[in-house]
Length: 220
Image 1 (cartoon, rainbow, N blue to C red):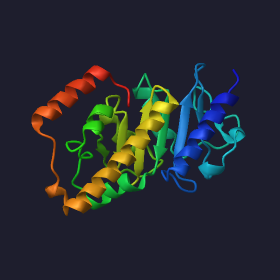
Image 2: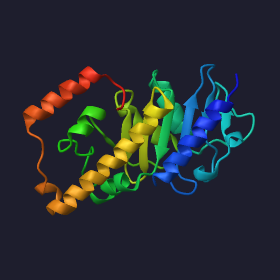
Image 3: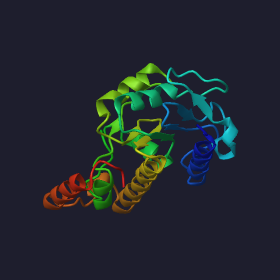
């Protein structure tokens, strides 16, 4: 199988993540599952804005690479593919505003969705996964309660994660997380505090959640 088009697609997404300030320097990692059971993933320790397609690491079904060093977050990616049969791609980034929410409001279990109709329609819920040391088995373990139901999530004091049935869906999930976090941050600043925000009424929230179920599982 010719992996070159997939390598180029991964590199393009990495550059887009960097251009949107969702990653910096060697932050983040992106992977893609191929039709023949291989896993393509970004290499460890490289600035994603300057990757070449040839640097993308190809892993076999056992997770072994013929050349190159895969991302240190490989275990996290493998956990998602193992528990989410529909997953074809995973994007892990460090969106600044989303991370800031977990630092400034450690009591939150999810991003407050009750203020934004589009957030409910697009993803339904954005849980916040408790902190785990990056690159460890603990990180994979902390994800398990949220899989496969949740396709987008914030990693407390670390970053964010989105998976999808395509690379574009996974990328859209990451954009959705940070864009929503920014809107909420601005709303809090304008209102003078989280407690002063004006939520949607319960009837509208129920309607939006019902509509979300009609739209299906994919991130919009």
